[in-house]
Length: 162
Image: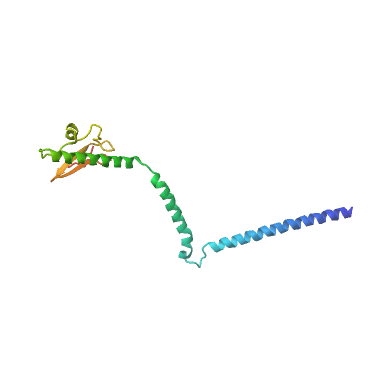
């Protein structure tokens, strides 16, 4: 009877020794990881420039890579309206220059005159990308085509915004 109890206690002791060995191994691993982390962290004696490049530079590079991947994919309505406005204004400017070269009239044409006389096609946009009308101004042979600002504020001399 005592013999069975002693054998059971010896088996339990062997099991506890195995568990303690496993716990000691886990503690040793945790301590080595903690030492490695402490070596990586800045120490009070270290200067900020000794550890900052290892943290800041990779973060900046990652941020720039993300921005470089995202920004070209942005397709905003304001960007599209600006490019179509420039293209339409260039077309109207070319038509006005041709009108002045072929016409004996030295007055600067309006956009409506250019459409009526066939210098601009019926399908040519006579408003900018934001729906504001163009106007043509001529100064000493230099033709410029303008429209209101995208927010509707007038750029014509003497006119207030809508």
